[in-house]
Image 1: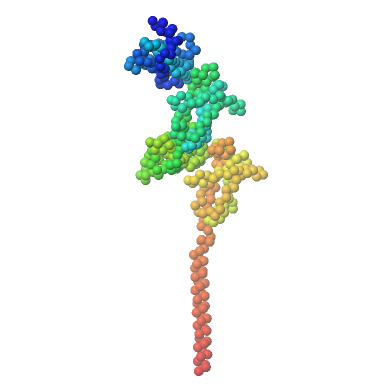
Image 2 (image 1 turned 30 degrees about the horizontal axis):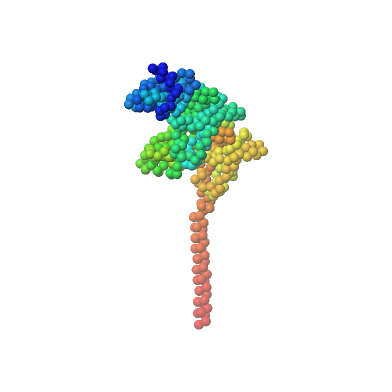
Length: 454
């Protein structure tokens, strides 16, 4: 009887269509388990699973009651299981229509994983556009983008970029909304085996930033660090955010921390980075969010972290007219280097603000930049150092110049103010005395004439 049933299923279609699905999903890692469910008609006696391009049925099962679902288990998926499936069920009323096609994709067949990155950033404002770029060092015919457990979103032909010897594909998402946020991966595959994919790229999480108040991003170790030092970046806000996100511009991995409450009502989170190295250098931003919201705040102002000692020379630093001046004077700090420098950086020891930067100019024998300070005040007194960097590595600096001490004293005009007031007071008093003496002389003379006339 079973043989007759199997022969007759090719005449299927007399009853309604079935439902077919895979658990935990249709994209399955090699060597993991998957279950294919075929939901049949009432009182179905047998269900048949068929794999397209196969000369035989993949399996037969009796449906489980009362759901009328047949279970086809694959305990360890291999590349032979990749493909398209559909199922039929037979009951006393005849064969059902075949189900829709279920595509089983087996990942991890090829071991060279691609890399997924977000342009311009994995944190996007609502309504903004984002491009996800999948890169491979292996010549897969196609690169495909997936989002979490959803069916794969898009497949693109890979393009070989000769100058960087990479294959790549761009996936453009316009007008970002809450529906677009989540975790993405990309894979590679060949045209002749579209259900056999490579290992996935690392996860890339996409975030949306909103309009709520931006937090502040601070460093208590300074903006210019030597390798081996520790670094803690603090994201804080007077808004009671539940969590904070730290982002290094140009990278795809973001770090999320819960908040700490301070006695003054601020919320903050400390992000401690491992021992500082050249890879630590860069520009950082942070965001805040509430637990019940998937939207992050506006970005903090950018914070630059610069790593000293990465270029094997040091510039020189000098001051004009000299290193001791009076408040209100103008001062110029001159950075110079006989080695090529694209940008000079001027740092004041202990300053909270970010260092000043100027593009260098080549003058006869060396590269130089002049940092001008107009009408200096005593607050500008301190120790200054100068560094250089190249455009190819903006955050990696030379060794420091020798330190130069700037001393700003109160102006001479301010020093003589009291003395001048005393002098003016004495002059007024002298004038008054002289005036009195003249008046007395005049009065005495007048009185004498008056007596003589009598």
